[in-house]
Length: 458
Image: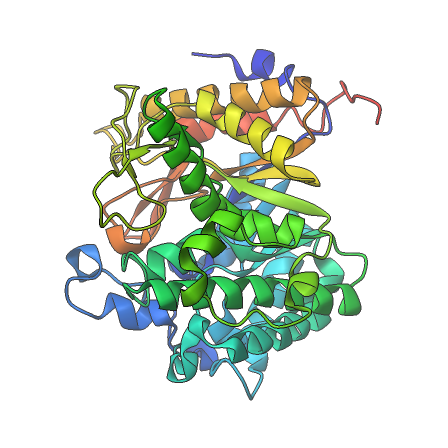
């Protein structure tokens, strides 16, 4: 096993180690203290949408066990906690009345972090859109961008003084393409026009929220968390390489382009422009305001080859077979070199600010042995491989400042329900007992070395 103390010497002493969660995946208490349903509450209750018809009603009961969970984070030895704030707790209908009890919960949570000297990295949107907004069209409706701006303003006015950083969105790729084109996530749409409308509304909402955050809390670093796809051509043929470039534009450029260049990719506009919603004058200027940081969520590479059939739809790419035989229990290829080439490629293409790896981890579903230990060696190996890549990026001069493991604990894994476990901590959903896994113990020893003495001068 890689010795965590030796491994730690590969990182600068001020490198930030943290853990990450999301509100809907852990909180439960979906009807408590004035919270109204989100699109995920509705989606989970539709037959055939979520494995086993699992839902977030109880999840990890974090809403009631937050103090115990913060103690767990403190015991993990990490410096920072990345969590999300549930819009349906704050403004239950999406617009209109502000729910003070919802704000009170996050007040307590953030104060609890501060009392334990844990840095707070909040995400404003991690997919739990208030269900009421679907009456107006949800993310396909421009009005939702303005509702989000107001929500951002309300949250930052109340909580911003104690936040170390804030992200507007988590993984817009999922809440746009996976939710409106592929139908896998809530609201389960399968429609390119709806997806393109959601894309632009989401990008606009991000920009409007950046304005609100800077207005209310100018000193809080604001960023955006993107699950950038490492798009790799399945072969060296010109056709596959062209398909990979189109796929890059579609899966990455749709978000990186407007945010960091003030434009949508030319290939996307050319192929789908007639289906695009109206991009109004000034929209791209709002969307492309400079950010203080960006977050990378990385799990697995995307390998593509050309889809040559005549009716192939843009980006006319299909999945190519994996190269690495290793895969996690969710079926994702384990291939850490793609993480390095992805970051290098993104910094080559765009003018990006400093980066935090805001999610990285693996689904392995082993449970406790008779002795109560959880031996999840494959997850530990995954962390070592990917953290090695992060260390290499730092030594190569890329401004990667921190790493958040996904996830603190096992939780509701969206369409997979509770069958997929990503946690450093095992959760027994019957008893809500938390057990730190082997990987969690290793990560604790690594994090304990920071902040360390080998600070590199700026």
